[in-house]
Amino acid sequence: MYPPKFGYVIPDSLDEANEFLETHEDAKALAGGHSLIPMLKLRILRPSYLVELKGLNDLHYMRREAGKIHIGALTTHYEILKGNLPLLSEAASTVADPQVRNMGTIGGVISHLDPAADYPASLIAMDATVKIKGTKGEREVPFKDFAKDMFSPDLAPGELVKEVITPEFAGYTFSYKKLERRAGDYAIVGVAVLMRREGDVVKDLRIGLTAVNNKAVRALEAEKVLLDREPNEKLIEEAAEKAMGYANPTSDIRGSAEYKKKMTKVMTKRALLEALKR
Ligand SMILES: Cc1cc2nc3c(=O)[nH]c(=O)nc-3n(C[C@H](O)[C@H](O)[C@H](O)COP(=O)(O)OP(=O)(O)OC[C@H]3O[C@@H](n4cnc5c(N)ncnc54)[C@H](O)[C@@H]3O)c2cc1C
Image 1 (cartoon, helix red, strand yellow):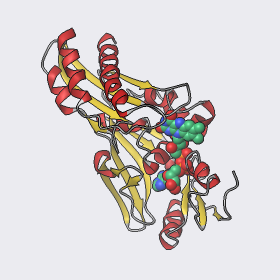
Image 2 (image 1 turned 90 degrees about the vertical axis):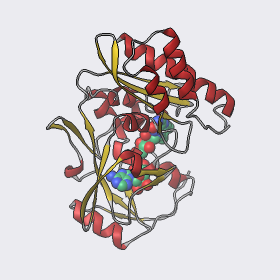
Image 3 (image 1 turned 120 degrees about the vertical axis):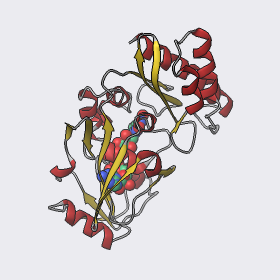
Image 4 (image 1 turned 90 degrees about the horizontal axis):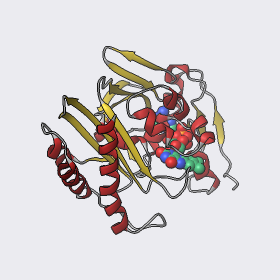
């Protein structure tokens, strides 16, 4: 309940935040605080300083630019939910509860990289990229490489996530299906589907899974089952079965590995059916 002692820094600029974090390796950036503060309260972490990002407006925006959507790292789950973005807004609506959604940020989620977080299923399906800023400048990496492993983002000391970039996906239908024990909980299984059809034929399909591996994965073989085909019950069943092959879950309080694997198939089927209905 009681965090350990720490110093507190309120930088005037992103450059100042980068510099302070680079020269104080055990300092931690503070965004929405809804993963960091719980960890401090359990004393899992003992940072020397917290560096408050909240006032840095150059991390707080959502804009469309040349067919891409740019989401500043400090954009909250609530703002994304309200932003009417394909797939991502639906995923945001399932994150935690209203209080957490008012504070938590997309930059915080992907820097923290809980293996059961909701956005990563969508970000992997969307081929999102992450713009990172450090003292030496900016770099952009695909989300699939940025997420190296659970709780292991591709961030060097002093670097901060600046924004998440996704294509617009105009004309796509989508669905994010989250299995949870109760409203407000992390996912037992989460499946994101993005689909583009011409007539009844599936022309592009992306299926992202969360909570069933160390990090989010794309179920590529499942996608292939429906690509360039007219979906029917048998093909959807086959695709969902193939998605199950990408799940390598662990048993925990949310369910056994066997249950989670089976539910990957069930949730994939539900997400595919919903995307097809829309
Ligand atoms: C009760 C509860 C339920 C929750 N349920 C869910 C859920 O169902 N699904 C889900 O996905 N999440 C859930 N969460 C987590 C929530 O979404 C957090 O807000 C999120 O994981 C972290 O974002 P934040 O902005 O709060 O980051 P913070 O807690 O401030 O920071 C998290 C980590 O990221 C680092 N960091 C933050 N911003 C940056 C940046 N721009 N660049 C580099 N590093 C940065 C911090 O230093 C820290 O290490 C839940 C949290 C709570 C408390």
